[in-house]
Length: 318
Image 1: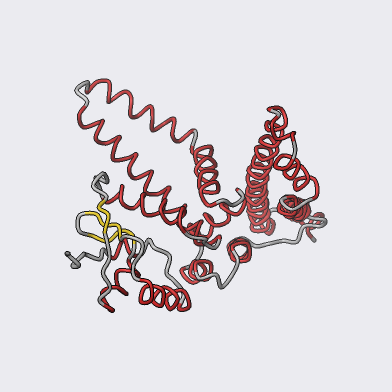
Image 2 (image 1 turned 135 degrees about the horizontal axis):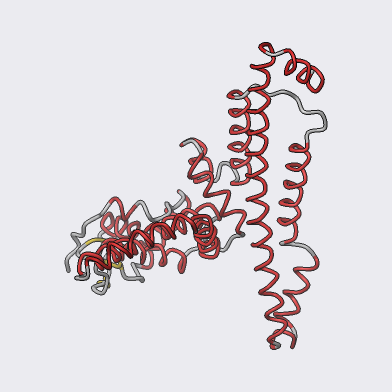
């Protein structure tokens, strides 16, 4: 039997690493019981069973293989590997989100390749010239909706709430490598790192624009209430209302009624809608604050040049 298989580092990095304890337990099991589960290979490359393969080679343990000949490209392999991880392992939230995030990236890449292939083989050039710019403009118009839908897919794939997926996405886009590592290694929660990034952004904006204290700042009050609603939504996941409804759905005749099922579905739908609107509101309020401070900065610079502006400035900000 051939035991000389290829280890593709890019494939191997898709697999969440085992802890020292998990590796020791796996090695003990393989030595005592043998390799009961077959290794999965594609083009002579391991795509499932990297740890088992290394241990079997180390101890001379025989193993069986299954070849995934139906997978055509490396992208197909990556998508299969991620789905396989979700189906076989209990994973922490951070790991599930990381896998779901990569899965969505690979799906988008595959869709792009399909589109490029379709464009290449189409004969109607005139139609292409008209169609693709239109699609591009439509994409620009619907960019925000597309982002929300993407995060909804990631949240569903990872089995987490929309707000958690939104925060994880923000960390990947705006966080430092150190912050990303903290989340990936479970050393800090997603919410904590997201809060750090948000606070750092606010501090940076304050450095760029001269921040004049607003008396009874409406921005601060709004953000306070927005944050409060976010917290309430998170608490709602374990509230008596939601837990009671779901318990009744799973353990009584109500679960057979279509209108009740629709009610539970709408609860989840409206929670996501509220979260999306809150996120948009929070970011818009931040933009409002920045714009107001920029206006005040301009006035502050012009005040010494004009007595009328100076008097107005003194009246409100003196």
